[in-house]
Image (tube, rainbow, N blue to C red):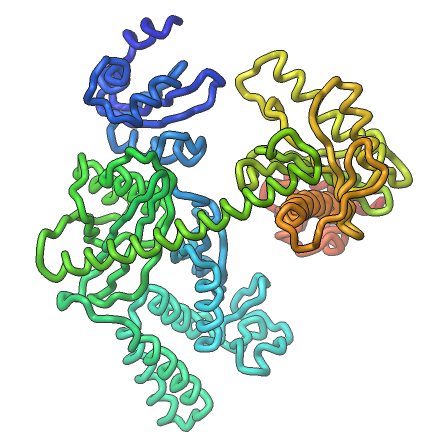
Length: 612
């Protein structure tokens, strides 16, 4: 359908639109109350368009849209699509998938407290996201000194009678696995942990004081001493919490600072009138983006994943369509949320402090970025001279082979582009043409051939979803002269004009095409450090894949050989009986008690297990 005709057929419903460039990549995702009016406005000549929109429109080749029932639904869908596509012209959190959470597994009889990278809908309580992994680990360590929490991954039910581990004997666990603490008593401790993580220390200390006094009155001096130590640790922490309000309400104060295409958003967390913590987040944005749009995009992305949403959120500027965001937050929180912009008074003063902190953190990020860019520039210049390249390489692809005595031979391809690793372009390969004894040369030939043959095919077909069509400015081979020679043979067969080099791990020697002797750079030279970093990443990626395959092979069992028993039924059987040995010992009637196992399938499992 012609572009103009497609515009004319747009519905007037609310929804989400996706702008695409000539290569079919999504470059912008937006929401609209009226899709027709909103999308068509981009293509009307107007000097009022911001520079960002003018530049973006020049790259729009096509668009798609999705109709929703309401504007709130459109906002939710917009969030999800921004996360999925990371469009070039949207404001988006940098590395938002890596932010850690503290997870309390309250869905278990005897919950654990641990750090995780993903927030699942599994019934657990999550706290975060946090931007500093070190702080999370320090918090968990501090919690475990205050509370004797279990750290094992056992599935424990009340009444279990296992032997207690060393942690119990040194006072670091209450041994629920040995039945030495009731579910109710352990649950009381978990409630105290949750109160601590919520920043409500003032509520926690009186409760612990009461328990200490009760224990002392019963002459349970060890238990009373443990409560005393907890109180002292919490009092030390409470002294660091600053009282900023008299009303004892929960609030978030959000401020931002921007430099070019980088923005820093700072959040202060006020709980019951006390400043209990703060986090900062870096965002990618257009240099033309206004402060309100940055804050709006941040609120959408942050609170969608946040473990807690307070009743009030204070911002330095008023947002467009605040009611829409408030309605969306109401659905997430289960209660009213107010977006406020104080003009004067204590709240404005605290907000100004948040803005000041955002600016300081942005300056630190700028300095780190500047230092990193200069280091990369020096490394690329040195690499250009050492490898006799026509210009500094913007994209480097590295290949590595991993095997264990010739089994599960795999290869990795990692990509370094414009100063950083581009994990979305990483690829993994299972080597098919090599069996028996390891042969790194043949393995390298296969992976290089498969990678570039696929790339040439995609370039010829000009497919929209091209995973291999981008070619590197330099190829780095993990190995020595032999591996480089094998890779060059494939390159020449395919008629490619791309420089290849190899880095031998033993002495960190660089091998170049047409030279018998390696190039030796100082071990601390920027160029060699960059090559080693890329090579080590390829090695890590290959080893991880290899371990996954080995682990998968080792986890296979006789159950995998029984027709009709897939992954789900295998999991159900193991969950019900605990081991393959117990499944083999089970009677036909006992097998039929497993959910999802019919009488016919139970008979097949019974017969197969008896034969095996």
